[in-house]
Length: 199
Image 1 (tube, rainbow, N blue to C red):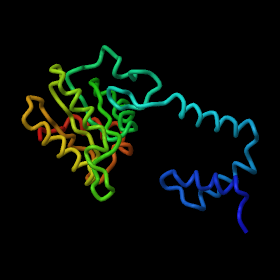
Image 2 (image 1 turned 180 degrees about the vertical axis):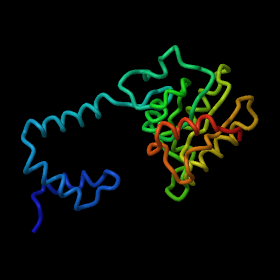
Image 3 (image 1 turned 120 degrees about the horizontal axis):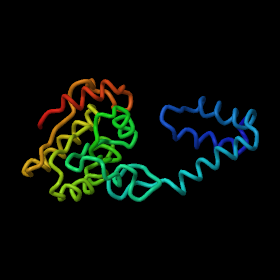
Image 4 (image 1 turned 180 degrees about the horizontal axis):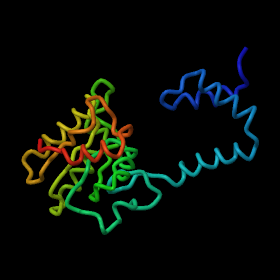
């Protein structure tokens, strides 16, 4: 026996989320069909359409936004001399929650991973290099995850900047090797920022 085509398509669509296997996708799909009324389904569909139509990457920093530029890039009160380089926009949210950093951000939207076929040209490194031509930038803080991919990315960017006058630092204390920034609490992130070191 198989599900009707519309349910099968919903199950396959839900499996695109990380950590959602076939059984979980089936449970979500059947809950949608059996428990949600038309109004609730319309709300979900509308939320997805708004993401598709209204959300894009900031042309300056790569953050996800619905304004051009994003709210951080257009905030004149921020310290324009430092840029934190992060892998994903979700890492920016975690950093902002600490209320310890008031500079700029650059979102790579990924990390170098040769085993997955992701090279430097596949992430937002070129945009970073363009931004670093601005002489007001004095420090780049590399806050990629402490995974193999994150370390590879940090080392690659560090090598690109080794002959520049910009101070290149790396977050260090507080985040364990193999850990992801999105799972760290505010205190851990604060300690990592305080303990950054020159590469």
